[in-house]
Amino acid sequence: MDRLKCPSFFKCRQKEKVTASSENFHVGENDENQERGNWSKKSDYLLSMVGYAVGLGNVWRFPYLTYTNGGGAFLIPYAIMLALAGLPLFFLECSLGQFASLGPVSVWRILPLFQGVGITMVLISIFVTIYYNVIIAYSLYYLFASFQSVLPWANCSSSWADDNCSRQPIVTGCRVSTDTGGDMFMNISWVNSNNFTCLNGSEVFRPGQLPSEQYWDKVTLRRSSGMDETGVIVWYLALCLLLAWIIVGAALFKGIKSSGKVVYFTALFPYVVLLILLIRGATLEGASKGISYYIGAQSNFTKLREAEVWKDAATQIFYSLSVAWGGLVALSSYNKFNNNCYSDAIIVCLTNCLTSVFAGFAIFSILGHMAHISGKEVSQVVKSGFDLAFIAYPEALAQLPGGPFWSILFFFMLLTLGLDSQFASIETITTTIQDLFPKAMKRMRVPITLGCCLILFLLGLVCVTQAGIYWVHLIDHFCAGWGILIAAILEIAGIIWIYGGNRFIEDIEMMIGAKRWLFWLWWRACWFVITPILLSAILVWSLVKFHRPNYADIPYPDWGVALGWCMIIFCIIWIPIMAIIKIVRAEGNILQRIIKCCRPASNWGPYLEKHRGERYKDMAEPAKETDHEIPTISGTRKPE
Image (cartoon, rainbow, N blue to C red; front, side, top):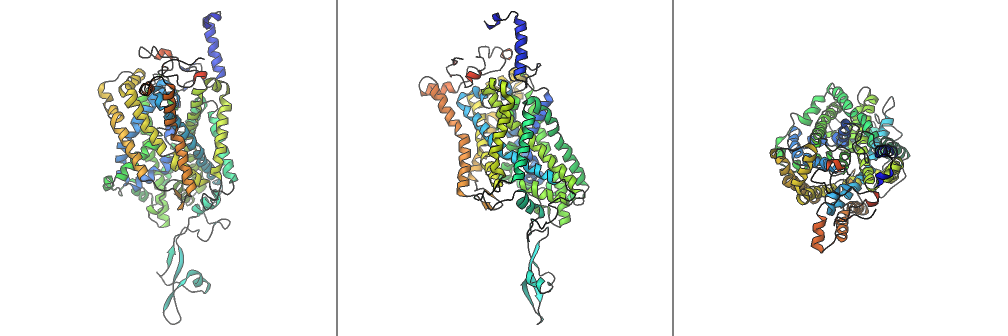
């Protein structure tokens, strides 16, 4: 009837189109979906996905895992776990988001009983974005500190270093000759004050702390003695954190239309830096020794007999590809309906894994040089996580000719690696808001996006106090672990076992075209059996091997561990809560209610009517802002 109010139907439609674009300026006139918008180009989407998947873990975790788990031999379980766990989940999530054009919460119209899984994904993404931007702030601080003629951590400065600061082991005592012709062991301070000389080979050493290590603790973090001692906010880290959030907000204020352009730089620049570092590292003395330790002659194939190696491979693949975080569903939801999500999944997964291997060569070539000039074994300078990015590698760069230049390149690379992963995480949050309150996002996308960034910045201030590093590790240890595994297991079990794997395959074929049964044989095997069993085994293993978290050998207090458990419980508790809510709202006896909640909602299916075909021709229209909850399971819609 609304069409009759317009003198010309075609003019009215044109006016609506312009209005939509003006209200929601992240939608273009050529977009297939005029309500939500689409990626401007296929390359925008692919680079955003690569940027989301390729993150800091590719640089500071994978090379270390490869070294400790048999070198080149580790690539065998790594490739197998990519095929068995990473790629099947990645393809599933990309297909799910693209088919329904919905974010990680609203997409559970496919299975209303499991809507809490989507909420869990978003909540975990929120927790992770809080501390992930703190790591970006660390990178910004080191980037700014590198603009000096001599890197500040190149030497032990009297303004912050103590007696333990040394690149070489520190002599604590030795044996000296006595007047009677014998010898005795004396403290080194006594030896020096009395002008004695140590007998050759009699020195006793203790390890010193590298200048870069003391700089990290005493200057960058101003680290307190433990989580109990919060201290003050480190003002320069707080400013770096604010700058990081300003960059993120500026890149996302137009949604995918602006972030899709920024990733051309943030996703590609790290490859340029890695190539430059690899070329520079390969020309250094000792580089071959580092490469040999990484993936060469030191490869130990007997490690393949150890279950820990396979667990590490599966865990690294799982977290590296960012599955079950909600970001893959959110980014894919802006694809056009007939986009080939299968080839996208293959391209992004292979790019991510090859990047990890490539990064290892760049990192270990320079660490090999560091080991060579310090007279140490490579194993003594190889570290993981923060110790690699902010201690070991800066120490190696400080000893290179032109150290500030290489340091600027390295930390700018860390900055870009972190930013494009952060873009997708924030897009996950804003996409969820878009699906729940589309009219509000059309009118107020900029203030809502910037408001999210401001709130997350304020929540992250605790992570830039003197105890901030303990908070960063706590959130990472609890939130980025079991919650994601639980969400992934329920996601694949719900879609494949309850909604129906064959039905889901038919949905995918509506987008990419019909395939032969042989094509789906591998995916069926993984989705129905292999992947859920593998993820369950990793979850059980992780719980059995749980250890009390610590940082720098400082254990966390009881209240800190309890807080960590509260955070993860807060994230996953919504799974049973939403299931109970859906069952209560359904009709019939308890069994009938459960059965109805295990069926797709009446408005599940392709977002646009032209894509629904015969299978979804009776589908209810996607819910509007006044109906952002899943419609009642009986199929009736709430009044608008």
